[in-house]
Amino acid sequence: MIKVAVCDNDAEEVTRIKNLVMDYEDIRVFTYIDPLKLFREIKNGSRFQIYLLDIVMPGMDGLELAEYIREHDSTAFVIFMTSHSNHALQAFKVRAFHFLVKPIDTQELIDDIRRAREFISQRDQTLFTMKTSEGIVAVPYYKIVYCYVENRCIICIDNEGRSTKSSTLRVPFSQIMAPLLDDGSFIQTHISFVVNLDYAISLKGHNFMMKDSSLVPISQKHYKEVKERYMAYVFGGE
Image 1 (cartoon, rainbow, N blue to C red):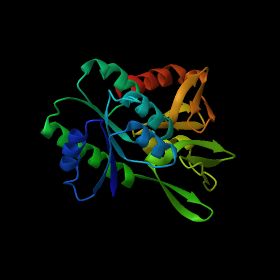
Image 2 (image 1 turned 90 degrees about the horizontal axis):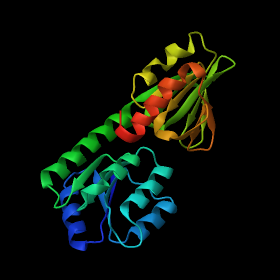
Image 3 (image 1 turned 180 degrees about the vertical axis):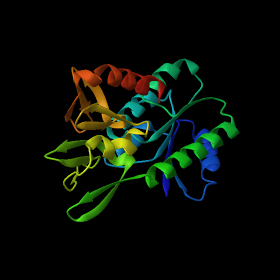
Image 4 (image 1 turned 135 degrees about the horizontal axis):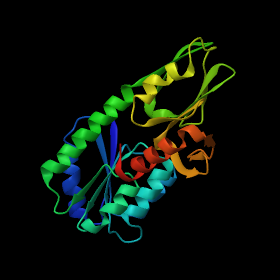
């Protein structure tokens, strides 16, 4: 079941959006006319795969709310709904999926939800498999924060802080990482490290600061490409 949060201080607009979105059988819609209520629920651990947010709201605007969401969830789809198109550049900074200008075109909204559902379905089914001492372990791509090689074993860190250790490698690290690197979210930062850009907060010198506060090294050889890819990812998508 896909959870969708709709937040707009206009109660009639919230109801209209809910009625459009809830037509999908696999979607459950949660509505909010107070952005601070949604903020508190997220702070207390609630998570949604899709957020439909107005931007101009009392108490906390949609951009501030999206920034907080991004601090805790790199994979959620954020769709802004606003009467003010001048916020578009700020929307890119929180990697918004789309920016809808009011009055919202019904078909455009439906198309956005359909595309997000397709991405979520594909993302959840794409698995990275590792041979471990306990057998084959499959980790969804979107959950991987970074992978690195240590003592001829791959260590995979996921978004819940868990680490999975592979059996001793019999082929090069780059060969095993190839499927991840074919996905636009991943990049090799070092001969021994591959990072999911969804979880990178910032560049600090020759390191990525990750959402779990860890630092991932960026070698001199990879630095130029990594910086360019990261800037494009943050401000323009893949």
